Length: 302
Image (cartoon, rainbow, N blue to C red; front, side, top):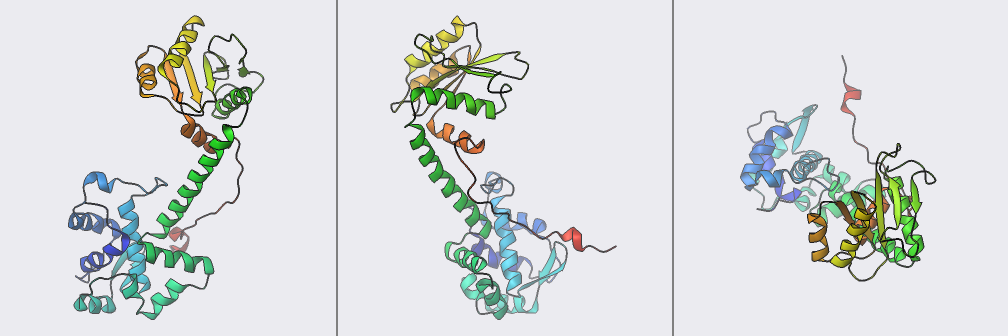
């Protein structure tokens, strides 16, 4: 079964609190997961940030929305219980219990509309898309990143082959290989280079080297090119190599690279764009948004 959206957890969460006792979110997660028939693997699914489980996040936002509507109330840090209003709603057994239903309560209308314009849009988007605000932020970030990756890869394909060779050496340096541009990375890239476009130290001490082949291509790189690269590694008595292309690799090329004794890493265009974004090569920061949460420890009294 698919992980339910956060509005679908409203009624089950409220029913789980119908005993009038105090509860915690972590206490109710297993109970709700069982009701929805979620598997262990589904419970392990994370938000795009990787910092919180998706179902856990959705139940958390459901609790927040029900609290804003006055159906649940916080007793102390992390502990909540159903209110008299919540019991009344349960007796009415609304089908469905969703954001639209919660708008009948004045407190929730204030929360959902909000005094801040951006918060209002976020709350309205959450109700329209059945996604939590965290998911909306993560989804927007993912879309921006995907669009930048396409733009970045298009730009990479316009540079000269020699500039592309320099680019991949710069990327490996930013990833922590070698030391400085002068000491650790050198671009070979000359006619008759024997299939080697660059050499970079694996560490600052130069205990081992990594050989690089860079192909700014449109067509996918096939097995013959990988075989030539492996031959060049053997000719230089090298064991490690990185083959980077702006396009992709054929199935045969990937299969061959995985079978040879030499350690050969294949990086295609999409992965190259991802690495450049991760290590700030060829990109710059446009905006920074800091998402904050309540620091409950600050308000604790001895």
